[in-house]
Length: 468
Length: 111
Image (cartoon, rainbow over all chains, first blue to last red; front, side, top):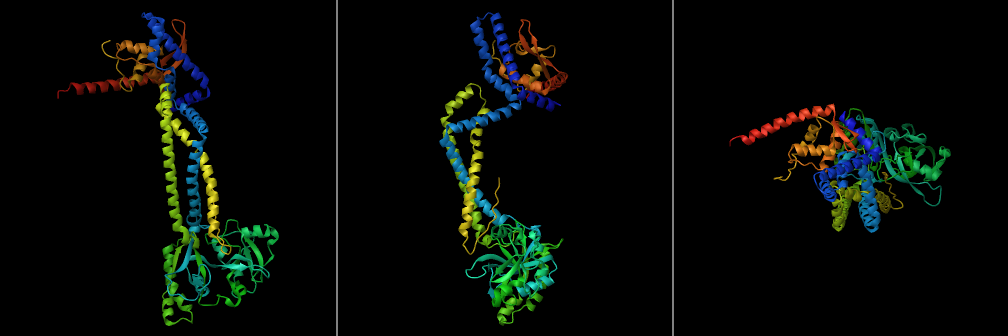
């Protein structure tokens, strides 16, 4: 009830401000007159009475300010005034404003840029459905392994992958993949693109939707397939085929072997490797077609695949790891390369499969740059702190220059709280500008940082999000 | 006046205003004068605390105000108690009596 009345009174004060102010003036004027009359009645002269009454009253403005301070609506009103006042002060001091805005903007920009990178490389999960269910299947402590390690993530051989797929129970489905460069030039000059070998379950398991056509399925990944389709990424489709729908059914040559384009992946899917993108994905069974006699597919010592799986409902990482450990001896016995000497064989047979969290995928970039990035972030934080301290000093210096002004304003009725609020507003009002400049800086800084790590044959792709 | 007028005990101004208005509606100067006269000059209320108190009490719903003509034909804002204000006054008077008696007992106790 009293809250309602307070609210109503406050709104009246806000919207019928003039009337309320006029009433207050009249009331105070009346008080003063009455006081003067009273004093004259007691024998003072008119001048004396006026003077005495004024002294008793103190400053009329100060009294009014005190009355206004009782009500909440004055807060709303004065806050706005204070903000305006702060901006006006800044306009009178463009050098100070520029220094304040720039120094903080630099600090904020550096922090944002590095955080953007860290977020893309470390914090964000894979762009797939329910990423928390994804698990990486690796060999735990693989020492003494020998053979051909041909891709960036040579964790498994094809033989091991086939056995894992057949014997695992922890996952609703598993998939394997390996990155490679594909030469798509029909002849002559080499034109390399980022390619992926993927098992038939690759897209299904991750829940990736096609933007166009269809994606690869286990039916495409038959052993000894003669010709297969290829799936291209959304960005490749956009810049190579101008996003035309007629791309489906067109032919692409990889190492001079024709592949039919059967589909385009969803726009936000860049693969399971953070820090890279892919242009073309073909089934694992196409590897012998493309690579020819160097094919790793049938070689027991050809390490070129990485496997991941999606946990069945109710299965935990530990339980999946236990099941993988249990099937390990059988798998490694069955896939033992015949060329191994007894020492190598002993190592090989002792391998155990393990399950590792896969919600953020694989990343060489992360392995190499995660710690430096955290360090950089800490450093940038420090820089921001120093910038703030500098700014605080600058403001302190300015405050002492304004001492007289403050004293004068208190004398004519400004309350201490109001002065503090006004000063704070003056400092805060350029914050919007700082943030905007900082954001722009961050954008350009991170756009310089990422390409500086890439080379022509080894382009990096970091999905930098832009917050507003 | 032998002593300088003393400051009010914190929080008692509201109660004194309510009490002053118990019998009849008054304007600001009248209230200040009445408090000064009845306290025999011990309490002098200055406008800087009087008017904020009016605004506060009005917002709380204990006072209502209207513009009326004074005896010497001026317009002035007259304040009057509301029903809620009367209740508040009774409550505060009782509480004050209790506390004053307690303080008196403590001061009179032989140590």
